[in-house]
Length: 155
Image (cartoon, rainbow, N blue to C red; front, side, top):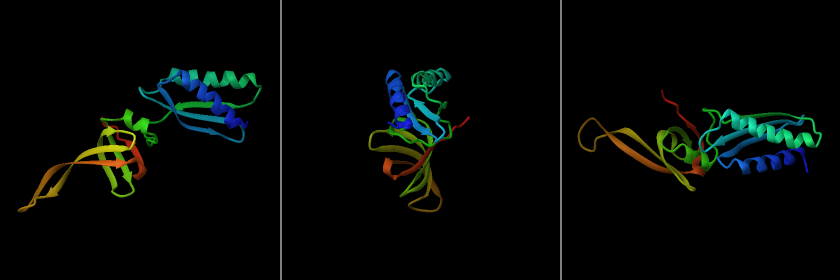
C-alpha cells in the first residue's frame, strides 16, 4: 500500500464519522506533504479541520511515518466539483462556464444527480416594435456540459 493509499484509507475512516463533511481534494507530495481540502453540507468549521488533521496524524504517527499535513476548507472562489456542492448552493448566484452555451451568470434554482437548473433575467428585443423586454430564462445544464462553476458572493 502506497503512502497516499494509506492516507486515503485513514481519511475515509475519519469522514465516515463526520457525515456532514466530504472530500474535495487530496494531494500527497513525494516528500509526504499531505494537503486535504474539505467541504461540508453546512460548511466547514475550524474545529472540523482540527479534528480531521488530528485523526490522520494519530493514525499515521502510530506507524512511525514522517509527514506534514494541511487540512483546509474549500475557498469561496473554489470551483464547484461535485453534485453535493451544487445541492448545498441552491439559491445562490453562480458564474457557470458551459461547453455549449458559453458563460452564464444565474441563480442555481435546483440541483439533482443529472444537472443544475439555472434562472436569470435577460433583455431581449420585442417581437413586435422597437425596444427590449425583460424575460425570465431557465435552463437545465447537465454536469458534463459544465466546465467550471463558481459561487458569486454579493454584499
